[in-house]
Image 1 (cartoon, rainbow, N blue to C red):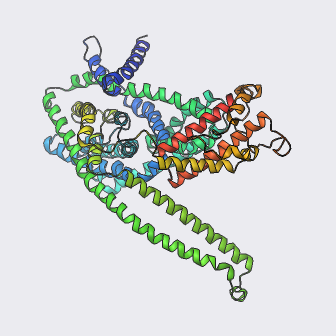
Image 2: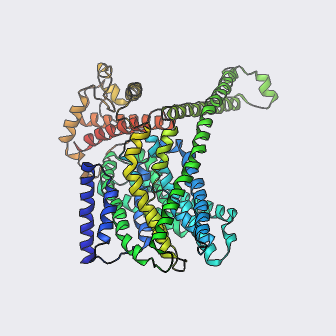
Image 3: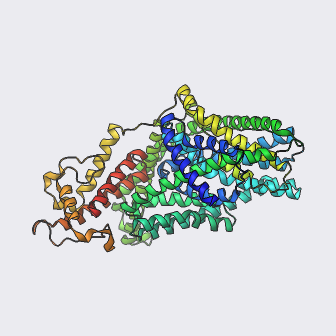
Length: 613
């Protein structure tokens, strides 16, 4: 009964914090953290120490999976170098620096144990990025912070494991770079492989599920289907869950019905709210128990707090010193990318000129080379495909450069990347995995708690002030007019190539459709919607595929007017064609992720309307 009562109170607190945060302008995780600390210090509340496995194996996998699903895959690809540098390089350097300083200040804590704590304090928290999102900073900053938070846990946990083993064995050689690199590569590759398989197979299985509720339930299992085998095989379960989420993000618009996507998305938002809230609430409640265990006979609470403050400042300082040259290097490489792209374009043009004369080949030359005309034509066709593939890559590189130029990372944006890199519940959970034989374990736990909680409170509460001070590039709520026109043209062109276009009167396609629409300039959409609401066979209960494959109408436009059901089938086919055009544009990076998401949502709305009336 006590457990049930605590769960009910926690749910009420989470709902309360979510509602109040909008009114007072403070992120709900910070409200829950403060509320948890207040509850933990109440005299009639017993100290609570949560099992770290509950955070690392039960709560974080679904949260990171959901973050991977919602991550714009196009933007993540573009920021992969930045994310890898922060998630791997920065974590390692920060762990070493913090560990060396702690060992110097407290010699009783050996270097391996000190590096263990440094690894615990190094990763930023992907869950804490929810605080940054509400501030309205540019999407590029959000993508970098989310990507860093999703993958730096693997680096940190590998370091924690290796440093802990070295400390227990008294063998500092276990911390040599070759050993750490080997452990990290194995953990990462195993996690990526498992996550990719789970994401790919899971996406295909979900494409066969017609009931939205059943699809959502299966999606709840996917992060654990990825994380549990990955951990068993020696990989990072958290990274496996992230990779599975990214694969689902890439495939969901192709393989999953719109109604299932919408239903799953809404339910996952609720799950994220509850799990995020629980993480920060329980983090605050544990504070009193950790404070209580720090014995005055060791170094005292006061000195531990000073150490936490110093190590937290060092972690921020290392982040500044790492980001400054990294941003300079990336900006420098982007400035030279245009010249490289122009050289590649010149080579492609040269290949095209040669291919233009390939059909004029001398038959005697072919005979001398023992090659038939058919083989020559096949070889020319292969070269045509290679050149076309090269042009697609060039278009994508050009669009990537436009993306970088539109959202540059200067000093202002770098300042936000530094200050928004908050520690969170992962830091405390990783600290609690330290074995009981760890010297001054309770002191290390207190340091981890203060650094994580202080980071969330100080940086989270002052982030809006820092944003107003440095004035970085902010997110915009609207799509620019040029991009809008380009998007309308693409969708209108893809509509003209469908069977629906042949069924409609030519004048119906002269008017551009509304943003993201399928046939908005005509009255057909309303007629189709009316017809589906009157057709009992369209109900979800009959198990019919919501998007029929290769529909063949009973009558063509030349034979007579199509029935409402035939128009519905053609409209669904048109939606598929337009969605495919958007996905191809995504792969080339033609539009911003915000514009693509808006257009996809409009297509989903129309598909749902056509299927359920």
